[in-house]
Length: 307
Ligand SMILES: C[S@@+](CC[C@H](N)C(=O)[O-])C[C@H]1O[C@@H](n2cnc3c(N)ncnc32)[C@H](O)[C@@H]1O
Image (cartoon, rainbow, N blue to C red):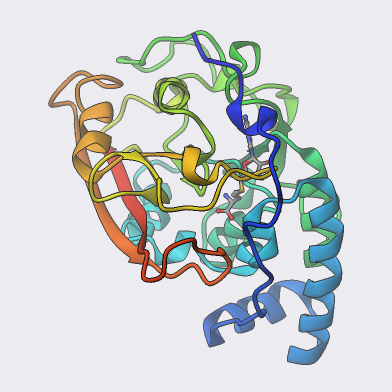
């Protein structure tokens, strides 16, 4: 049983983060200019700043403050090419982006060839999906990807299913008919979850992992993947500033590569039925007002693949 959602109940002082400059890589700028249709870099910059201020009013995640919503994440993950090749092996392969926020990673995957009609975005806050339309200057008619609003910790939204070991006997539901993720149990070939798991307590990270694992299709190559805050040795991120709204700070629970692998291979899935690739890398965090000089932050980069 999942615990109350810690992220929602934390109240603290907001003096833990500071504004950072909007800095796009050439790839990000090219993708955003193409996807938004804006004429040049200065129009793009002004547009992103306007969208950022709308989004901060919805919920002040540090990732919004530091412009993560325009950074390319999915395409920098080591298993991205495998994701793009899934539709060749399974023509109806579904991709779920959980905690998709504005849907930037979804739009990148579509630009790189993943079929838009086989993608589901899901987030607790539908306002972020609407802001995604504003950012990319689309609407549900011009960008008809299925979006499902809901809480990943609510079994009524995600389903009550165990890990699926055989292909569901019933016909797959039409994505546009869905109101929840529950009918997708055992039907999703790829789940992307970036900057998501670290929002939850240790127990809730395990609950979310089981929930997402139950959505995964029981076929070789089906995968869950992403990146979020990690540590070289699992535990709380004690070096970080205290919690603030939307930010667990030094109460954030972080897995290391070994504990993350053990969670998936043995707890979520039967041991030996998945391959877990996980590594912890240093991350620069200019946005955090660090208490001790020289503190290092880390990101866990991972992919769990059915054998
Ligand atoms: C830090 S943002 C990450 C967004 C995006 N995946 C990225 O990498 O930039 C976390 C997202 O998870 C969503 N979220 C938070 N709690 C959630 C929950 N319980 N169920 C579903 N989505 C949730 C938030 O609304 C937000 O859009």
